[in-house]
Length: 502
Image (tube, one colour):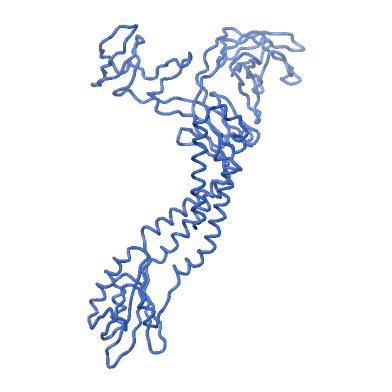
């Protein structure tokens, strides 16, 4: 055990030195051979740190295997002492001459909270009282739990996985090692309601701090505006905004002082089917197949491209050409040949297909425009993606048609809002760490909430009805209190008592 303590001290000293060297040494030192050899840029994943943990794990394993059987025996086995000299070595030893010694001692042990068992040999009766034997297992649970924590940490450090992904609402993100996809449905920045001491923005663009709220109005202490000190102003609370933007490094970004949470609404897609849908917040990750998606931050997005209308050419080998203008999400338009009409369901400026063959826009820029058309005929309706070049015929032998985008009208670009930033982690040894934590908790509870109390007595029949009783007891915690309690119960036995050896 001393060896394990020294390994712990050495690990702590080296880890602290590595952290301080990384903070205090100039950045140029990162290129030095010694810095790279000992991996001081990431000491807790370095080879020497893992080596020390491995040596500590071996030491704990040896300790558990050597001490474990003895602690289990102490917790569940009983000892019976028939020789008064064997009892006299324990604290609180008493020699009592009393009537009905066995019954009196048994009753006294029961009053002290001890469970009593009896053995008889050579005309003597040995009594053994015990309680709290499980406390002996506390150190065993602690050492085993620490061993599992180390093994789990090593497994997580060696096989751990970490990645960072970003995405805007509508994006589908997938990495090859996942085996599934993550669809970003929405991302929101949630703000606190208007309250005291918040910075707010007034309808005229000035900003200040809320000094008082009374009913539906708030008193705002205005900040200096254009170099002029301004007084406070009382305005309706509903006219104030606490989600205003400030400029950092020349870019507009939300004022963080009023932000309560970041929320990403995401769904796990497996083979084109939605299997899990959940909100991801800072302290509530999404878990799936051992992967954990943590809400980390956000970043400013790119642009979003929208159009007012889409002009589509419809080509028929038999009937010729027709042109219709459609609004995304608008009503269908009839083709001149009768019995057929089309509607524009959805427009994507940069068409892509994910692994589940679901369409999405890879960016907000107009790179590969596509529109999803709904073709309505007497015999039914079908949907087709249409591009600036015709890819296939559709419609059947009776009315084969080709569609392609001819023109886009009312093209608008706008900022795409914010992109969520998620950290993805997977640690195969995580369950080992949890088992170690649970065992250590149980061990600490056994050590500090219980104590192993033992008492022994040997009753020797004397002349007449008087018996000679030798007894003593011990406890692994708070021994003095246990001796006082045991002595108090023994005093009720009566008879002649003595602390002297027999």
